[in-house]
Image (cartoon, rainbow, N blue to C red; front, side, top):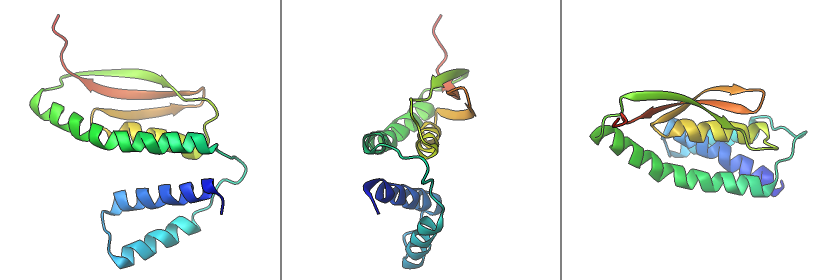
Length: 131
């Protein structure tokens, strides 16, 4: 298994544990089994640099999610907006999924649609502007 394969396995296990929130021995065995049995996409190769950048974004997104949650609690966000965000070039389906997961992971944003022309439609809640 190459480096990208290990990163793919780690990503699958991380998503499994985020979904189940269970670290029992039985769940770990099930998670590893599911991660190994899921089919890969051998026809598209992602660069290691792109995967490492995506994993770095995960480490930033976790504290950002907590900060945004407290902002929503203490400062009401009553406005909504829908924006378009450009998909970075040369994205594999795994990296596109990870982008969508990271945008949706934070409480203020959710991806409404992935457009085939290279854009994400993102819904955001924002504080009322003082105008």
